[in-house]
Length: 346
Image (cartoon, rainbow, N blue to C red; front, top):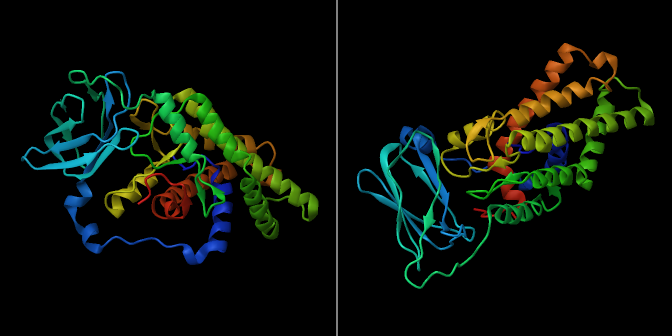
C-alpha cells in the first residue's frame, strides 16, 4: 500500500527532501531501453510466485521449480531461504504447469492454469510429501513466524542508513502481518527521531511560506509543527494500522522490481488504490484512501478557519493522494538503491 508507506505523505516528502539535499549526487534512476518500452510482448508479460511447503506447513528452501509453458518451453527457479520463488516475464497464455522437485520429497505438479496479460499469479497450496524414511523437516515455521522474520528485516531498512523505510516489502512472497505487527510498524515510524526531524524541517519551510495561516514567530512555528505531526500521526495510525487491521489489508508497499518500466510505473501508481489483502488477493485500497479521508477530516478541527472548508478538504485529500502516487514511484525506482538492509537487493 503502499506507501509506501503508510507514512503521511507530507512527512515522507520532508524526509525525502532532506535526503535529496544531503545526497543528490547519489540519486539516479536507471533508464530502461527504448526497445523494452516499445515491445508489446514485454508489456504484456506477467509473473508467477509462490511458497514451497511440506506436509507439516514447514518451508522448503532450495527446491527446484520448473514452469512449463503450453508450447513445451520451460523456465526454472529455486526457492529461497523462506521457501519463496518467483518467475517474472511470463507471456500470457493458457495451460501453464509448475513442477517442483526437492531432495527427500516426492515431485509436485500443479493443475494447468492461465496467465493473463500483466498478471502476477500467486500459486497457492504447494505441499510436498516426504519420500520413504526422509520425513524430517528441514525448516519448520508458521506463517506468523515467517512474517515476524520479514518484519524484523523491514525494521532495519533505512534510506542512506538513517531515514526509516520500514513500510516497504521486498520479499517476493511476503506472509500476512498480524494486527500487532501492523501497529508496531506504524508506531515505529511515528516515533522515529527522523520523523520528528522531517516534521521540523518541513514546518520551517511552511513558516517561510506563511502557510497554513498561523501567526509568525515561535508560537506560529510550534503550531505548524504540531499540526503537521498530527496530520502524519493520524494518517499513519489510521491508514497504516487501524483500518488495515479492521479490513484485513496489508499496509506495506509491495516492491515489484521486475518487468518493463511501464508495468512498474503502473504498479506503483495503482498502489494508492489497489492493495493486497491478508488473504493474498488484490482488492480496493480502502485503508489508504480511508486513512487519508479521515485524517483530513480530523485536521479540519485544528487548522485555522481560513484553511478549512470543502475546498480545502478536497484539495488536501487530492494532494495527499498525488504525493502518495509519486512516492510509490520513487520507492519502485530509486529508494531501494539507497536503502540499507533491503532484502534480496538487485
